[in-house]
Amino acid sequence: MRTAISKLTLLQPASLQEALRMLDEEGPLRPLAGCTDVYVEVNFGTATQTRFLNLWGLPQLRYVRRENGILRIGALATFTDLIRSREIQEEAPMLVAASREIGGVQIQNRGTLAGNIANASPAGDSLPVLAALEAIVVLESRQGQRRIPFHRFYTGYRQSVIRPDELIVAVELPRTEGVQWFRKVGTRAAQAISKVVMAAVRSDPPRLALGSVAPTVIRLPRTEACLARGGSMTEAQEILTKEIQPIDDLRSTAAYRRLVCANLLARFWTDTHA
Amino acid sequence: MRFRLNGQQRELEVHPMKRLLDALREDLGLIGTKEGCGEGECGSCTVLVDGEPVCSCLLPVAQVEGAEVITIEGLGGEHPLQRAFVEEGGAQCGICTPGMIMAALALGPNPTEAEIREGLAGNLCRCTGYTAIIRAVQKA
Image 1 (cartoon, each protein chain N blue to C red):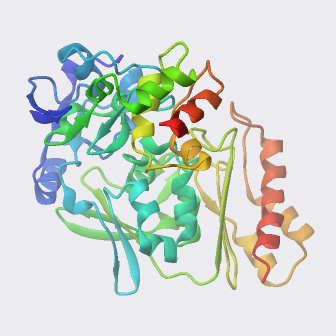
Image 2 (image 1 turned 180 degrees about the vertical axis):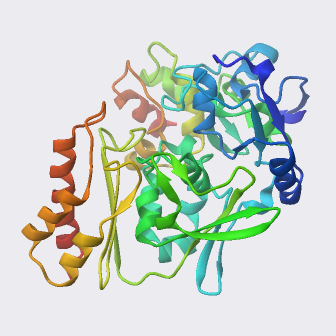
């Protein structure tokens, strides 16, 4: 481990209220849930923070439950929790599909949905699912709660509206009609960061979300509108390739990503045809 | 801090952000758990925490407070999985083997090949080509 551990401080709240007070009075603090992203940085000496807040001791944040017709996922719910949840299997099957392709079992057992959101990678596997399901991110501070629609949560590459005194306490999934579809394209099913990841819902209008093709996860409103008005697949694919901004990087090229996205759109449309 | 390790209550005075992997190897002398990549990709540091396989290189020791931790040493050397890995050639250089066995322990009884492949997808082996590992798990 390349980070000098003696320079790190870990605060260990016994309640959510204490965690929020610590964030407010003793910050800046980086919250720790399952540590599957943060400890990679700590191990390689690239973590810029030295003060951390351990949330793992707050089991009241670990739940998946149905409340007034919506699914509410607590901040400490792991990907394994989501895979095993009957409610998620029934109402958000593509979130189960995405969770099963995140890392391996070891990562799924610790990594959390809220952590995937907070890490804010444009390649986060669960993020297109949340965009397509029009999730709400519930933030809490000592001033109270804010409920942020997912499409307004990110403001740029690895940037979001979350304030230093706020925690993600839950994610809400409204009920979604239509057939859900998820596909991750990477070098291997497990343990691979995606080249492209797509989540979609065959509803009227259809919903399309893509990861790894822009600075943040994106919805494709113009492509969605084209399909909704009965446009041809060729026309929709042309619009899609203009609606994304993929780059060349060590995982793939912009040209390949454009081609794969267009192919995924056609595959989604065929697979979900009634 | 306190936790149960291989069936025994242990107390440890270490920095709360020390990796469980380092606490096991340096402070508790249990060097069966290996470090491979240090970033959660290879699975060679896999241990069970409350029965679930996790990467001990990504885990601050503070997060196992009150938990039950099982390492390869907890299997005692004559566990059916350990014997099957020897008999089937599931171990060659041996670095991935403790992690493979710990991940395989969490599979249910009589797993199918697909279940084994998914359950061990987070464990990389550069020697065996996996075939002998899967045969060993099926045999155990």
